[in-house]
Image (tube, rainbow, N blue to C red; front, side, top):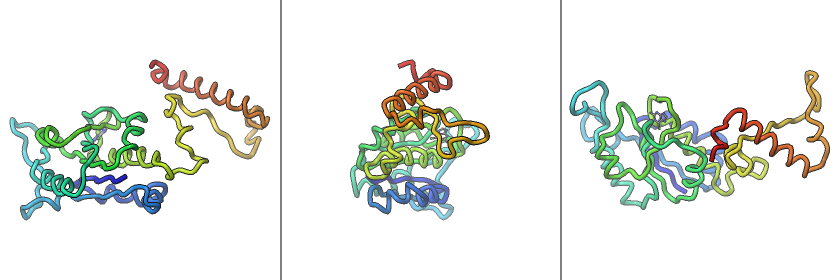
Length: 225
Ligand code: 6GU
């Protein structure tokens, strides 16, 4: 898989991809992540990427030409399976979308800034618009890092068996059950006996029950469909 991210703040996105699992996935050759500074495709001395909005109103709009030049250059090199615009008015990201995207070959992401991008860029190039939740970030970069992380950890070979993605919260629309490690008693609190029993059928049953109970208490909306 290859992910290209177009941004006015590449430095904000660098470190998430240079640490831990995301770095290891790249070193193993399982994914390539390329950051592109939108200002590299400007033509004026001020490297302008935004302009006032037609019709008036506060806030600047990302101007189409630098994005077009950047996109066209990238698209000359390869076909993109999805061109994603990161924006608070996109569809709300979830595990299902992460699963779908993890099956793609080449993904191009555009990080929104200011009041967002000129609508015509969305009309011409964008195939998917994603938000990571109902709150506003100062730009799409952190959201792009979140979405990339959720996708990359699903790629075959990125996680080892101990951290298998199949047992994640949400993978079956349930929250994960509680987990314990040594010591068996801590601060007067004991690990549930069942987990020490060695009866794996019973342990699995207990975990499923706990996952269901937790979901019912905390996220009943997940049980609705
Ligand atoms: Cl993708 N961008 C911004 N700026 N804010 C957000 C978001 C994205 N998702 C949730 N809030």
